[in-house]
Length: 556
Image (spheres, rainbow, N blue to C red):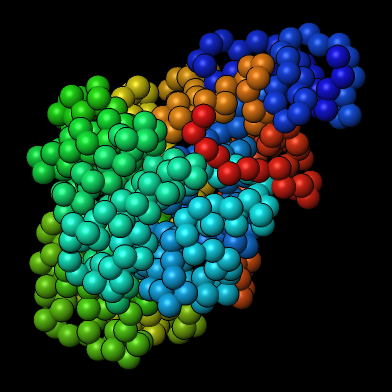
């Protein structure tokens, strides 16, 4: 038999968890035609002796909703062997959208996902109005990797309620119109819908993100759309206190499971800095939900978070910081200088929140703009406080103000050693890389190569076969992508080929490659020799081939 592509002499890790085996992979028509000791010829052959061939990684939690307009490769994910991503998470996105609402939905992305407004206004193409048109526009522009679309609830509510969407619940007639829009998107192949209740998820004009105003009747109605269609999933950013699941949050997952009859994934289940074993009790509490398909989503690595105070996303959950958002520099400095604000901030730090737990030992000075202040770079806030004779809150805010809020701080909470139990637990879904979001804070797109390089090769937490299954067939099965996530005849030929001894990540580094020269942090892959998407080589030793074989994914 003749093939389009033959991958020769690889160690094949097929995504099922079964032991790896040596053999060839024959590809024809974008699908795997055969595995084994293959004869025949091909237009291209890859010598994979000494390398691992695995299903392309499937990232279930990204925010490339806008980036698909200017970056068809969806970097950095594709460089790391990711061949499929799911976008539209956390209830925020850019479709459907009327022309007069472009700024409103753009501001949502700025505040929730940390993408600069100037980048978005230059980069978003707006060649759609409805959600099906948005999906089709992505395919028409061309995709390097495959993209599955969740329907975020916020733009649906904007479309029907306008600005009132961030102020109240929908009335019965509005609820039915929103459900109709969701029904249309599911009919076009969307993978489900997403929403959030996170306090830090603020939208247009600093108001709560619109989907946070959806009441239980609304959520039940939208879940029923999935039940009647017989397909789709729900993703919800849920836990106000990471690592804990409150009774109210438990009831919300229960409602979504009951009314949808479909899987639900909730974020995030992480070790708590103040109680690093709390997640174990949470898993026990959530067991009845998990048995019904209510799967918690977890990270596989801790990220160093960089931030400045012009757009202080890390403090969005804290009530006293709401007034700082979307203000001119002079007004922000006035607020941050106010003793009453500082007192409220110091008092609020007694309650740990996502991103910053109040542990000043975890915060340091990363970059300072003013040369006269550069001697503070690399120092912890507690050291700065000691040198200046100030309380940590004052030392932190005074340094930022002196640098006109250009100082970039770094937060790193060392909880990673407590992730091992979660990563090895079948009751969790590995994801939360957040690719495309918080572009100047961190880059989590490398979670898959980190999983293999760190947790398998270095820490020996579990086998390579188990790790690959966690990042391929498990997310494929959850989202109903029946032809992805495994290497077997008839499956889509999405393949990551890497060197087990060197696979990993390198970075982060600063790049100015967003529209208009906007800055982001990127992480390069090491040891990934080839990324194959639908049978075509997308990356060859870290270099793109210039093809766009990706597709819009639909449930099979």
